[in-house]
Amino acid sequence: MAVLKVRKYGDPTLRRRALPIEEVTPEIRQTIADMTETMYDEVGIGLAAPQVGVALRLIVVGDEDGKGVRALVNPVIVEQSGEATAEEGCLSIPGVFAPVTRAAWVRLEARDADGAPVEIAARGLRARVLQHELDHLDGVLFIDRLDPVTRDRIKRKIKKEGLREDAARHAFAL
Image 1: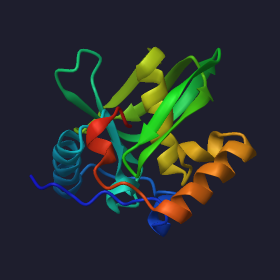
Image 2: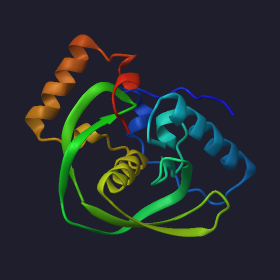
Image 3: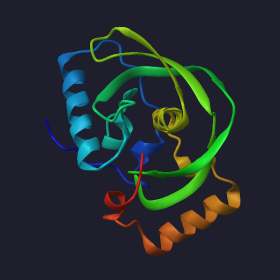
């Protein structure tokens, strides 16, 4: 396993739509292992392949108990309901946090690391993490979900001050 470099805001890879995975190969399993190692190293609770420069529809997320990681290949939200607003951060935008409104409950379908179909229903933090990571697969960052005034203020601050490289290790980020 290897710790991969997490791409930061401004990297064009973060804005591209990821491609579907046709088959779970040994290379995909290695990417999953490397992403898991990277997520733990960055003290995150979720990581999408585009965040480490891999343009594939693949995410890893901590499980409900915090005792393991689940890989989801080609995940798709098939149902959602409710609304919840909570503060989010992102490993790709260290030091930046803002309240984001998302669905309170989601159901998604995907394939696991063996290529078997899985279905997950989630609410609360887990639902938020899944939605945040799936956004990355479509080139969407959490700041894109903010109102225009807040988003522009954050972008101006990043342009003026840059990103804090050590910030992700000191606060909750997805």
